[in-house]
Image (cartoon, protein in one colour):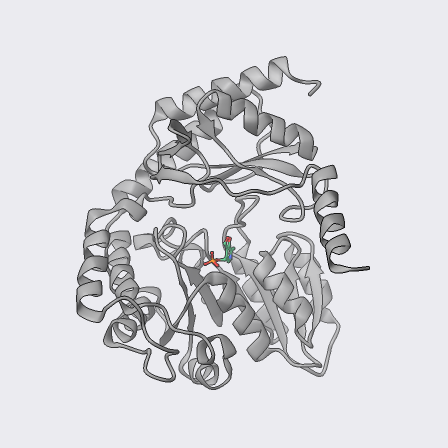
Length: 388
Ligand SMILES: Cc1ncc(COP(=O)(O)O)c(C=O)c1O
């Protein structure tokens, strides 16, 4: 097969299965509205849960960082790219989240890849929740270790897998709040089962950090667990981008020696670290925003029950509506867009086949009327377009 036949065939398959993905140029995007093609929509597809991407103090901090440090870091942290701003942010994150050390990474994707690639060897096992993020599952598949998946959020299923003894090390991996289902992992049970088997626990709390727990410390704090490896990302509630790994001293030292994503990749711009430090300060005092978000979640779920919509058991800002067919899900997303709501259809392979869904995300900035109007539109769709 030549290259062009290969590419054309692959693209054709995506189109035939209603799996074609495309980017759209969004003109303005805050945590409540967005502008696309000169039209304003109420935005229910943002992970900017607290609206911090537009926070004036964070924007200002980034500007101050730029004038202090310039635009980029100039190299990996192991060469000359580790500045005072990086060190201060790492210290601040570690203190806030109760760990000895924090290490900054360029993205959540990179930190999960790095953790698994650096720690896991041939005779090791990675036992991951079936619905873990692609960055965890892919890294596990590519690593020399054996990947096993346990039934979503089932600590009994995990226990059964861990009961089989192996010679190597075992890493249990899960998310604090699941990115596509919105439900929370039973972290207390998972930690107990992992400890009993002398396995380490990795919790990726991309969607819990900033949003839940006292001062936004996230899912682990809320569930009173302390995993050996905690991943937090800055692209959601922080309103920026980047990520960090929280761990103990010896593990951090190990990553500085063996973490290829740290050694061979340019570190984040120091100005961004200055902005992130301000985002941590804002998050710690954002009780009012967290209360608004909770009010919006409660209202959404109350109306969804009223309209008898097929909700999942999600207490979080992520409220998926499972539609099933890719085609119907796209149709619903389009229907909502015509009524002024931007809600992304999520299709396989991001979610399992046959479980295409609308991933509705709520933020602290939504008004109750935004939610009421969305629910009316959804109700109209389900009453009048049952066959589509
Ligand atoms: C659970 C989870 N982990 C990791 C990531 C990747 O984070 P980043 O966007 O910083 O690469 C995401 C992003 O979608 C996520 O939802």
